[in-house]
Length: 181
Image 1 (cartoon, rainbow, N blue to C red):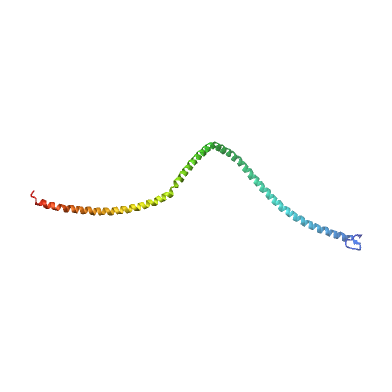
Image 2 (cartoon, rainbow, N blue to C red; image 1 turned 180 degrees about the horizontal axis):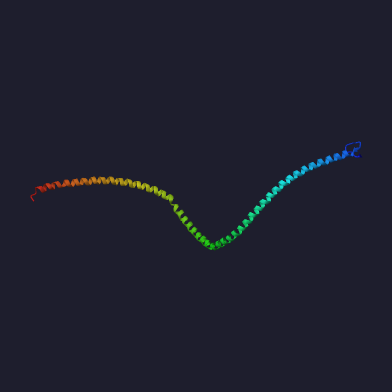
C-alpha cells in the first residue's frame, strides 16, 4: 500500500491512496448522478420544446397550404374583378350623366321646397282665418235658425191669409145667391 503526502483536511499529511481513490470515485459518481438528472431534465424540456416546435411547424404547413389555395382562388377572383372593373368603366359615363340629371332634379326640388316654405309662412294667417271662418259659420247657423223661424211665421201668415181670403169670398157667395141669374 502506498501512501500519499497530500490530504485535503488532514493536517498530518499522510493518507491511504485507496481511501483517496474511493472518495474520489464517490465524488465522481455523485457528480455523474447529478449530471444524469440534469441531462434527463434538459432532455424532457427539449422533448417538450420539440413537440411544440413540431406542432408549430405542422400548423405553419397547414397555413401555407391554405394560403396557397387562397392564392389560387385569388387568381380567379382577380380575373373576375378585371371583368367587373371593365363593366364598371363602361357604366361610369351613364352614371355621371345620371348624377348630372340628379343634380338638376335636386335643384328643382330645392326650388319647390323654398316655394313650399313660402306657402307655409301663410299657415299662421290661415289659423286666424280658420277661427274667423268658424265664427262666420256660427253666425250663419244662427241666421239659418232665424230664417227657419221666419219661414215658420210666414207659413202661419200665409195660412191666415188663405183663411182671410176664404172669409172674404163669403159675402160674394151670399150676393150670388140673391141675384137672379
